[in-house]
Length: 615
Image (cartoon, rainbow, N blue to C red; front, side, top):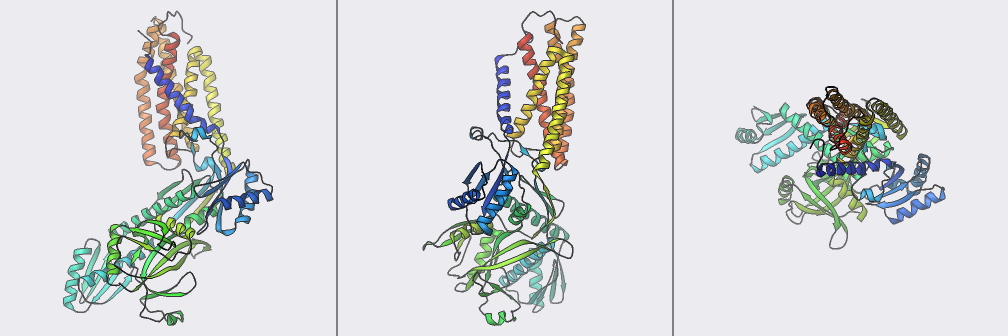
């Protein structure tokens, strides 16, 4: 029978609409201005912190909607930004420098919606406000670290091959010169180097000296690895901030773009992202006098550091192991209930540690914490400078040959062990980073963008609704119903898809798909009118109208979908936001304009004797 849908199609349509409406609902609940408190270094957020915050708010007569502690973070919600800013001052004064007190925006979605993973649509920086950083990786330092590693590997490798050399020195970045004792050792060294490093270095021999020059391909590989590794570290650091839907992506050959929607305090974000702690392991220099090193006579192969008590410690300059080989770090307790960090290395790190410790049993080894922190000072090039903090956290005697798993003791407190484990687990920066561009988008500007975008959507939709109702009468009302459901489905799907973020161009994409949705109905309705003018019966006219218009609608939407895929593939930022909403809108508009309107029209007119259509 013409124009009759089976029951399963109506059920499918109802389920789709209900799910779309359910997951679009959280967007009706506005975000609350909030204060997020997290611990710095050894400080932790617990119930005592909660009591201090409540007391500070009460003393300054700041009314909070709620104050709670979850997952080691304290979140205080307020009804307006004035209370939020006043509360920040009060909380900062009460807690001091041991805590990070950051402005934020917190969703107010009801618990019953959160239980089914129904959350508000993720908004981009231009709509929600937040902070934008463009970070530059210090590539010369990455090359310098690679040179340190090469020098260490050369010494170890030649020693294992029993090749005698008189010196290994760095000529320039990426260029190393090895001087051998005699021609026989030079022959053996040349053979060894060509076998192990021939593809990565140009090897030139001049008598008993061999020069290794890093190839351009190897330099590019080191730079790409440094950039990729730093992106991973920053992503881990952003996750520890608890920022939802943050953007961390590569920008060019040596820069990283970071966008933190909802974060209003750029200074707090800089402190959290800019400093990353890692560990280095050095042998302690027991052959030279520490007092002479303190007096300024530091041996060439050693470096003078201090422990947390301020006592000088003379260690070998050669690094046995760096933090890049640490696979996992967990805080815990030793047999005397003293805090410690249990470290697990990757396979390469385990081999390095095993080789380094097998010949040093009974000798002291120093565990050194290295952390780069951003400063307010700028260098000659106008870029912010970084401060390198180095501290010896432990000096222990090697009791046995170490492997992939071992522990670090001597940590000051449980909180510090937990903090350091988190820092190490996030990864080691291959090279320091500098913030070369910083931009803050205020929530008021984001709110204005949302208002302007929504107004454009509302005005355009109302104009289309009025036109369709007047021009196509009852069929126009059906198209209007489909149009409303189309917008609800777009919002619901955008809220449901992980990683989908709505930007201002994304709102433009929704407005465009609203017009495309109506365009499909216009084609269908005009086809039905043509059939009626040709004298075809009502039921046959409805059937032919949908059947004949489908190919035209499908062709137009397929070509537009291809365009959306191309924009998403080659675009970035706002262009991708537009492509996402455009692609989702094409699918939902075809569903509502064809399946949705057909279902309603079949329900009203299908299987009945109808003399005239209101179209």
